[in-house]
Length: 412
Length: 94
Image (cartoon, rainbow over all chains, first blue to last red; front, side):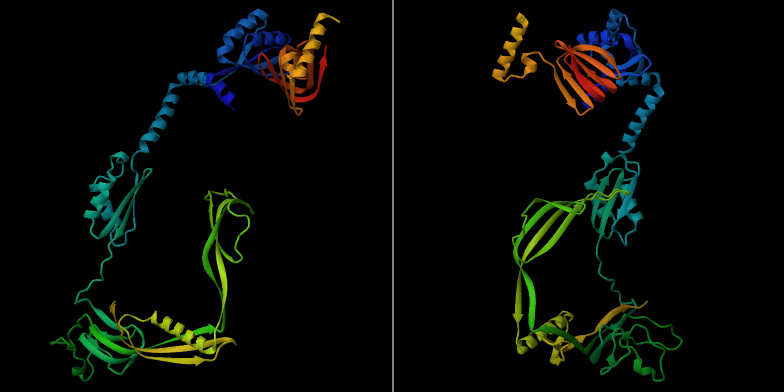
């Protein structure tokens, strides 16, 4: 390998000479320190051999002394390649030009990609970047990335972070938009709808047209305060909007308001919880061990880590790294990092009372998770249901709350 | 028994006693066969005959004959020859 490369670098030739004077020729050449290789008879009374370009002159001398004439039939290696190129200058120039063009062109920005934006359009970001000096065809080293990031951040409204990454001829502009609060305009038509099923106990209307009354039962999603006046029924006075003096005659186009108000209602929540009288499980003790290995095909080889897992009960977490698939080539080699966490199994036994209390607490907890902040618990009740299987206790908890069930919903 | 034989015998005794390799002390060829594919002959005195079926190499006071098919001399240095091909036999002649 190395030898072949070296002889290619210096150049070598293939020569032939008649078989009858071969031995004399070779012995003399070798004694002169000429290195010959790949001496092969080709049958027709002639022999082929290879010799370095630097020793061809010495070989001529040997040929004169032995009286054999050799013929050069092939030339290999860099010196011949160079002289061939010298004869074909245009090709050499073309090759050089190609490499140079590839290098030069790869130092410009040819693609700009904006990502992470939802409200702000790509164009806006690109325009600002353009003004700041990031445009197609600009050279990569002329980019001042921190300044660019800052300019885009300052000049594009509604951004909270900008990152600019250069990868090859591609520039990625990653943006994060500010999270704006929902628009809050009084003239925006918004209904107040029920967030939950419930029985209305109190209603306080600031603006809008109430469609329900105290004592009504409402379903989730039902409109409580409408943003638009309904066509007036026979007794028009009753649904006159609060806070709006001059009001919908039949001819007047309907006016939109933003419905606002507090609608307090009784809401019931239910949850069912099961508790087994004999509970089995496992808890992690915190002791762990790691094993690192290679998986080739279906065979696993452990490189680092214990051969035998020192725990009686354990959970296994496998992380594997492999060469990404490319085309159809799928390297069946994986690096595996396996973590073993020791576990301690436990058995809890409960009496009926304990189980019931536990189930009740579980059910209450699951209800509390669903409550909103404004909810005040008015009543809690507990019902024991028939268990689905022996050895378990099933409990239903019912919680009654008083809460504001109003929810804004923009009118579409 | 000539003086040369006596000298050789003494040399062999001496190299056996000191456990020196014979190719250094006695100027013997060292021949390495790699399967039937390659023969390395070190410490040679040039080639006597070459064609693709037969290679004769002069060593010390003998001739090594390699027969086979498609034999080529992969390289020749002043003290080493490498013969490549399908080797059938290797024998010594005086």
